[in-house]
Image (cartoon, rainbow, N blue to C red; front, side, top):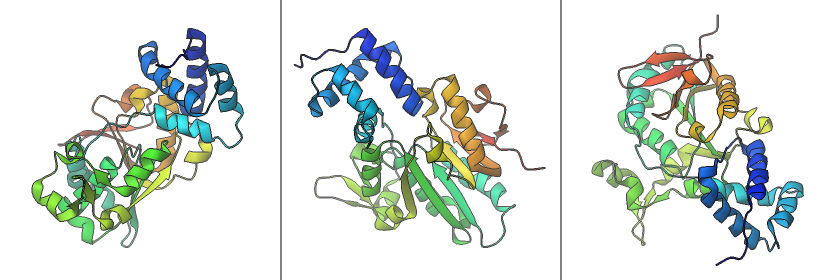
Length: 280
């Protein structure tokens, strides 16, 4: 049992600092989770106290510890074909509308953020391959981003437990995965090569500025960890990243209409999504 403790003042200081750096807000209900992760990082770095650790965290030139702490503080809970109705909406409603405005030979660009351990972007790739009739006629660029560098490495490796793949049809699993020696499942090299994984902090303009020209964005179950101001800033990032007429899909409990009026609500048969208005 560690002798280190995190005081109320320590928690407040850390919470404000982490919010400024990431846009993620921890309320008092997350104290146990935050304290546990903080103490683990204090001990891992050999710091004597929260105070000495926090000083190092703020002023370390490399930012290495901030990244390690961010990796420890982010939650990565997902599985293949989660909220599958949105993938159905992608292939049945969104993409047919997008290709009407595309020139032949142009690329459809999709951004999935957060990537977590890769289940979501690989689900998109699988769905396009299996269920979209236009896959043979159009090039698709699929980029997936996360703030957590450890989870990005897991995503690139593409190796999953039984729990992650439990909702995949068996024939699809047999075609596109192979079972590893330890009983896990690894997605095929073709799919691993089809997704580009990148580190992005939505709260850092230098990270998000290069992300432009997307036709579809999946950002599901991330904004629930943000406060109102951070959500508004994220919405502006996504608005700038999308082409006119582009679409963004959020998690089932999230609503862009409660965040901003930048986007139009689109009610398709499969799902409600949000659209950047066409340029006039």
